[in-house]
Amino acid sequence: MKRTDDTADGSDARTDGGMFSQSEITQVTHKQRAQEWVNESITKPFHIAWSDWRTKIGLLIIFGFLGMGLVAWISSSTWWLLDRLTLIEQPVAGQGEPRTQPFEDMSHPLGTDMSGRDMISGVVHATPTMIQMILAGAVFTIIVATIVGTVAGYKGGRTETILMTASDIAMTIPGLPLVIVLVVLIEPQSPALIGIIITINVWAGIARTIHSQVLSLRENSYVEASRTMGIGTGTIIQKDVLPNLMPYILVNFVFASRRVIYDSVALYFLGFLSFRGVENWGVMMNLAYENASALLNPNATYMLVVPMLPIVILSFGLMLFAQGTDRLFNPRVRTRHEGETDPDESDEPDPMTTVTQ
Image (cartoon, rainbow, N blue to C red; front, side, top):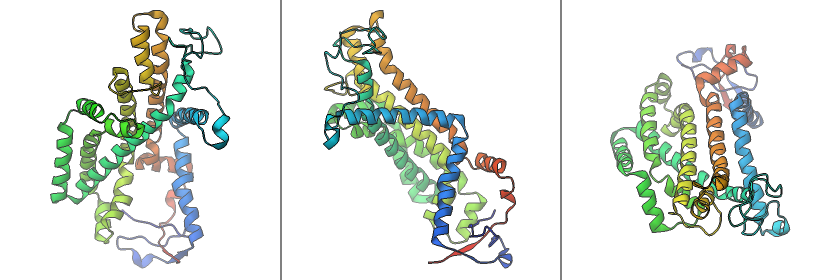
């Protein structure tokens, strides 16, 4: 194992493990540090991730939904110049003839519902709230799970016992019944709050698995070497532990995102979450089921199918993105990729630097 820092000219400056006598000291300016950071943190990871077709398709789908959210926000915004700009009208009753079938009237390509609301308008204007729910729920889950699992696994002792006991208690609480009770009691209106409530105990299972991963990682030779060199716990977790957990964290970010999508749609469809308009794809399905008997009436089936499409497509895009970025965070895959793109790089000596202030 060896630790390295890049130098200005890429020359060998230091290798530890008893070879300090062979090192030389090279100074690096702040500008060179910034260039190196941009190259290592942005340019290289982007090229590596973009080389996988799953990343491209996943990103296109995700950005497509972000674009839909932006269109909906612009169309409903009352902010300054955007006040009179409408790209897609908000879904209101009477936009068209009720129960217009898809492609029957091209002013409403995907048809209208039983109240004459345009189906495309409903899908587009439900996107911003869904994005808020996903971000709030997934980010909350990953942050809590990563902190609890990493700290418990690395610190051990009483800290590990307390944190893992809390995780076990959270895991024993049935998730969906707990979420239903909370939404009935709190009656949340904020999409972000709904996202957090849906994932209120999802973090526990992820934290338990991350804890197991860290127990294995902390015994690796490079972590032992970092501890021997007197490097702080926070730095070791950041530099040596978290990079190895990133594939797992990213996959579970996607898992939490899909959980938010599915559960929010289910809660709206079952009527546990109140609504005033068509603010969620689950609301569109609820109205189709309740008011148009879409499950029994073949002529109304499209009212269920149209809001299902964004659910399936968004989930598919998130999964492709997670699979495609595996080579970005997986050290073995990334090393192999770098070896393919720059075979001479691995032969360069390891440098050690001092940084000018």
